[in-house]
Length: 114
Image (cartoon, rainbow, N blue to C red):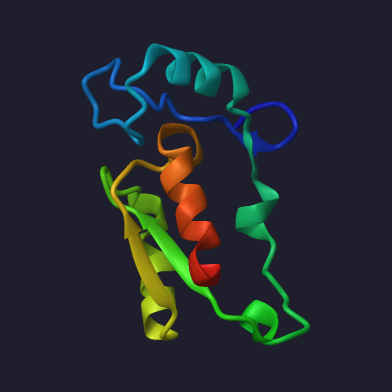
């Protein structure tokens, strides 16, 4: 835990031989990520989510799953989406798609409301 009650970002790169959480291999992308990563607020894990409206608020819902490499902490979210018949779309990139493949991600978001 870090100051302010957050969980510090893991090293997203393969510096210690562990599997990378993303596929940012470009040094400029890695430098940007390293400078911009911030602690994840702990409260998001401790506070139940209460929705006042139906999930998606009546709009179509799509789960974009970054698959290469997959991000294991999201497995429960993926399973929940499958069980709730949410449209699943795979994107062959790591967890930081907005950095590694921003054009592909933008196209997916723009396409038919995903």
